[in-house]
Image 1 (cartoon, rainbow over the protein chains, first blue to last red):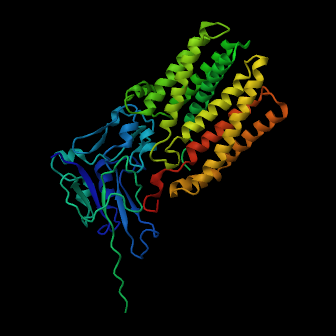
Image 2: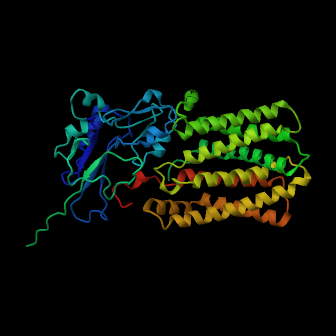
Image 3: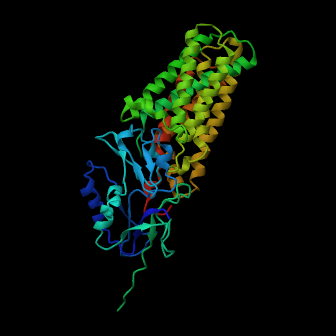
Length: 185
Length: 263
């Protein structure tokens, strides 16, 4: 069976430390202001507790990627294992992918004058290693999963606070944070 | 507020003005012989599309590689837009250079087909999944209205006296439809999803949105009073369309801005 790699974001374990985002930056040394992985706090309307909860998100490596479909120069390809790769040398910097991705994954590099995005560290995957962000997560909140063999569980595809778009069919899966235990004296 | 994308504002509005001019030429051709000067009209259409295409290059990081934008005709509406706009420009330039006072009907209908294809491709290009408020037929509707308003306006510079009342009627109709659409759509967004609501609020709170509405209403008022299209009116309408297009690009909210909050 073909692999179908995806990120599993366990918001119950995520402490919002930004280590994943820092690991990504440390590995790829993006230009100032260019960020591939963001850590989004959940709004109090979604998670109304004094404890905070987070979504760590980069490219969602969609089944039917908007970026790939709209790119006029075919700078995007999708590998058999589900990873969506941006070939920056082909990009002419039209910004159509940036405008089209519902998750804001492709970003503009003002120095190269071309778009770029998370590559799922595919070269590390090919070498049998984990993506830099997954490897760095100190709480195990960010995992690499294979959707082709993933057992059904309490993970969801479109939690509150994440744009629902069936058409692009994002691969990232989420485990929602539990309601914190209230201790009263 | 996102980037105003001035090169794209210029490209879309000027290309639609050019397409509108050819549409009005076809309407007059269909209505019967017209004593206007087709060659000058084609020259303006080619010039508007040419300036628009040149302006569009300025939004690219690598304009010299723009020719590669034709590589993904199979799926990308932007590639199809580039192709259709290029064909339209070539036809308009050919008609302008062939030098006859009356344009060839074959060229007119071929340019209409290329122009409408470019309009549809533009509408689909700027209706991406990330902008739910316009991820539908609205961009195509907006662009078609702009094309008819500007086309009827600029065509009045070249049409014979006998065709002026027809152009004035078309312009009035397009302005009324444009005003209704432009006023109701942001209000309808207010009762939509969170991103659509935010887009409605952003549009209604944008000074340029009201400049566009005011200029369309002013054009309508002038036509109501004069019953014909004054020579300066198309410039006023063009200013209004440029303001409206700037709002389209800068105030339409992207889904990614709300990650972590309710949708």
